[in-house]
Structures are given as C-alpha cells and as structure tokens.
Length: 248
Image 1 (tube, rainbow, N blue to C red):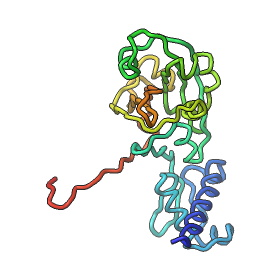
Image 2 (cartoon, one colour; image 1 turned 180 degrees about the horizontal axis):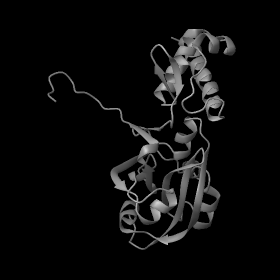
Image 3 (cartoon, rainbow, N blue to C red; image 1 turned 135 degrees about the vertical axis):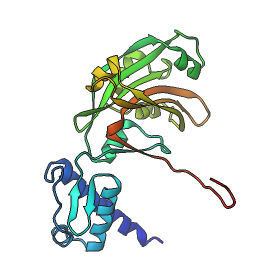
C-alpha cells in the first residue's frame, strides 16, 4: 500500500505543472496539447504517469480528449464544487489553478435580518459583523458573498482584515474552527444589485447557497449567503445507495 503514494503524488505534480501552463496562457482555450510521447519526454515522466495526470485535468474540466485526435483545453473550465465538502470559495478557485480575488468589498455593523437572526439565535435587528464581497476566479466575477458573524467573535472593524482572504482561517485563528456547515441551495435569477455586482445581465441563472457554519460543539459562528454564477460551476454530490432490495 505505501508504494502507491509516490505514484499518486507524481500524477498530481504533473497535473499541477500542466495546469499552471494553461493558466499562464501557454495553452489557450481550444488549443491541442502536445502529444503524450512529446509531453512525457519534455517532462521526463512515463506515459502512464502523464496519462493519469491528464485524467485528473479532464475530471477537473480543464481539458477534454478527442479520440484519435488528441487532448484539448476547454473553452471555459468550470469550477468544480463538491457540495459534500465544506471549504471556502478561495480554496475552490485555487484548486483549479486560478487566482482567487475579491472586488466590491464592504464591511461593518448591521442589523441581522430574520433568517440570520434565527440561525444565530439572536433578535432580529441585533447588531452583527457583516462582510460583503464579490469573489473572482482569474479576474472573472463568479460569486457574490455576504457573511454575517457575531461581533463577539469577529468585530466589525476586524472584518477589514478578512477582506481578500479566508473567513474560515480568521475564525480558526480565534479558536472558532468550523467543523461543519448546513446549506440550503436554491436556483435563482440575478436581479438588481446582485446582477450589477456580478457584472451579468438581469435574469442570469444563479445558484444561491444559504449556509450556517458551526464549531464541533454546535456553536454557530458564521452565516453566509452566496450567489454563484451557474455557468461558472460544475456541481458534484456524493450519493449513497441504493442498497440491495431498494427500488428506484
């Protein structure tokens, strides 16, 4: 079993190298990659290791294979969002080899709206710390995010230090590591402020996530609403079963 670790590490390392070259523009959208023998020689790896790395890139939506022709860079690689895992938007974007950024940032104290107050167990209108920002992937606006946090955990003025980074990391640094999150996901259409912030026409399809994040002992430390551009993401979910004898 231990012998399998280097092979797995090698294919991921090769995939990272190729991903960096695509992101850097060496291979543009629609371009065909060099042949497998040529790439293997160039990188000094075996064809089997290279083929395994290309499979990883194909699973990530970065490339696609045409039988008898070669491997091509996709026109617009989707960001893969595995809903069975709870991780920040920055981590998801960076896992695709794209630069994560933030624009349209604002923060400060605000009164908690009803859904947020209910999740935090406070009165409607009670002051909470709020951070609003649009997350970008390689410069493209892809998610409009609003985070609400109890001011006893992150004060409103401290939210400025979170801008551009991970709020999960900021919570962990304060001893409030997020153990799990519960999301409600609904289809939506971009209107008004959200359409303007994302830079898309009104009516553009969105996936809206309303999430409540808690520590291991059940303390709610963060409530978030994220409007994801539907055409920028590929959603995956691990589903169990059905077991023997169950009917569809």
